[in-house]
Length: 285
Length: 288
Image 1 (cartoon, each protein chain N blue to C red):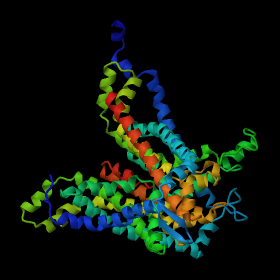
Image 2 (cartoon, helix red, strand yellow):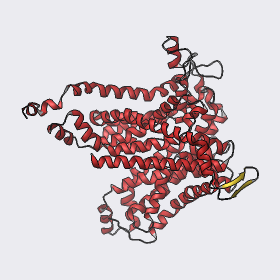
Image 3 (cartoon, rainbow over the protein chains, first blue to last red):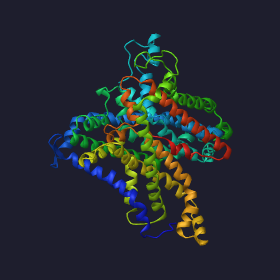
Image 4 (cartoon, rainbow over the protein chains, first blue to last red):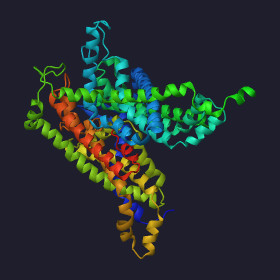
């Protein structure tokens, strides 16, 4: 397969890009790790004291934010999957000649900056905005009803932003399925539901896994949605909001760095549990 | 047994649920597509609003003035210029470096491949805030002033991985016997690369560059940590919209949408003319 033999060529090709990634990804991660173990203040400087105690400290202080971030991200993943699956399925199996056009229609809104989209959702969903103002005028909902700054509103915003990340991998996986397999299942007296659940869905699992990861990982670290649609309400803050504030406002670098690494650890644990569960189900199914 | 035999396969394929499903699924899909466009519709509508105060929350009247007033504002043009400069240069650098890595990974076997793969994979899977924050610690530690250069470095960093993945997909699907044919016909390896390999993988490089440009111009999170007081377009938008969205934000959003709409329209038209599937395009073009 490979035409070249090991020589200098691959290293020359790798050197500039590899060096860039080492210098501006790997080294910063190491610095952030070291920073999390330092003590001191912004004014007097920090010294490395191998203060591992910072980790239990930030976890005990902010564990509820990790739980909230994980719950928000899990809910977002579940909703985008539930909503995105039928859409991906319809485009893949019923799209016909319009398949590509429909996919582009799914992606089109996302060419507009996500900051602008999120800001417009804040306006649409504001207390007296287009939706709730109208419903209040009709007395369908109480005058003091509000949606912004609630946990549901943050999950709503995350769901909107990550829907294409779910729909596209699902579409790719579903589109590949050989439809004769589904026909074979129904010919063998599987009900419509059984044929879907035990053939179509199982074959689309790679798309489900890819879409879930592409949604869950950015969602758990997000802070813009809680800032804009959550209207900066500390009751709906996610871990990202605290990390951002500590790094850019209160300049409390060691605990900000520690919070970041705990976030990475939480994400990795949840992702590996998920891929393991889905993987074993796939073998059993 | 007789009950089973009575259920013919033909009946099985078109039960009631299927006929119901024949309009439920397209209906649901249509509604979801409308939902995806809801904030875009509001953005376009309010770009023509004529607000009395600074707040642009309720509809006050129709005007084109927002579109005319836009061009004299130095804050806006500065932010736009910064975004375009960063996106263009970071796309060029990341595409070159990423394509080279993609070539090395598909064409050669060498010690440390697994490590290199890891180095490319992890930045794509780490939450953005971690990438941004760790770069901030680098700038702080070495006392590097944050500005357009640090933003540029950050954008190249997060774009390299996406370029490698996109280009590698194209290289992996390429028929290598074409290169061998070139060599057999006495082309040296350089000629073979430029006359055979490069033209074949060029569509992959182009879509990688488009993806990198789209990711760069829309990035908020990583940029925030490397920007200092420099403003790119997303940072400027966020800054001026703390209380309400000024009309000029919606005007610019509408213009960007228009460009994307025309771009996609052309792509669809070209696909129809070619009559072949181009499903890879929207998949690789989706932004963050």
